[in-house]
Image 1 (cartoon, rainbow, N blue to C red):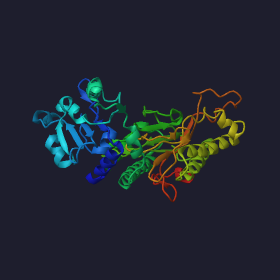
Image 2: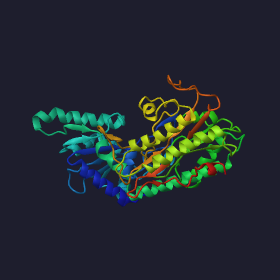
Image 3: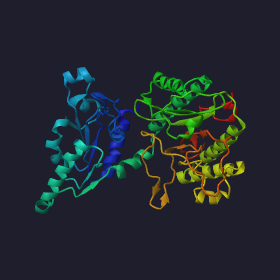
Image 4: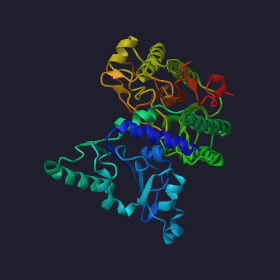
Length: 439
């Protein structure tokens, strides 16, 4: 896991970016699943990134305008033996000072009374509206009181700004320690894919394969899945977020598996592989698979510093569309088909996304009119696909699809680190060549 020094460096960087503004970053709360049962706790990613503290209902204050030793304040649930018997250990007020590099700590129940004092002298408030309703009501009440008094004393935080501007650009560029953690998440995820491919045979249920993958994640020390695993046989693979995972695997179909693990400190892997259930592609399956693989490899080769995620997408897309034209599934020039979106009944999503603490991680893809340039330390997925079904109508002027193609869904996804010397495929342990998929 990332050590305390790594979190301290992030906080110092964040405080510098805030200049004279106060940041209020709440932790996540427990979420009810049904009745009095709750979902497993998942910490807010922004809060975790700055604190490394994994308890619910805390609030972190970052106050760069205050003296050294008063700039990082944490409000936490106090220790309470009766609640710890039911719900487990808590660090408590003194514990977070001793163990988490906190300057000052308080019980969370003191937040309504103390927050106003901590915000005195701030030029603005950095807080995300609409995400933390309990804390939001306290923040807005105090801010409104400051504004009411501004005309008399000239002292108020006049701006309320989302933390995205300051924090998400930090999270987009991964440090060496984060890269190592994501490498580990990718390796575990890739090993699980290989285990699943070795186990698959006709007559199994999708859920059996899901069980093998997710058991492996836990055995390797991961927290669990990074997202709901997709184990989609045959036509189910044409449903992009298929998660029922309870169908039989049929001889002659393909199996698409989109699964990745999340480590105990929330860094994620995200890998998709597609392969024949009986170990042998049909002619149609192989033709489409080779197009997707060529598109993905072209996209990966364009993951270069100074280019952009948009270039990666367009590079993959052109190879994909050209291949579909050659097979007769599309008609027209590649450029016109892309310009008119005439391919989208066969390929309806983008080619990738940022990866980090969130599977679809934070960070802008564009800065106004200009795509965000790739820089060393960014991590993105590259995941083109083809999905042939009757779910979307064939655009006017495009060929009707023969039944021999229908029910084939293919996606190939890898996690790619932008490096100065070229792309690093962090998930390369999961095989993907035609020969390997048939071995």
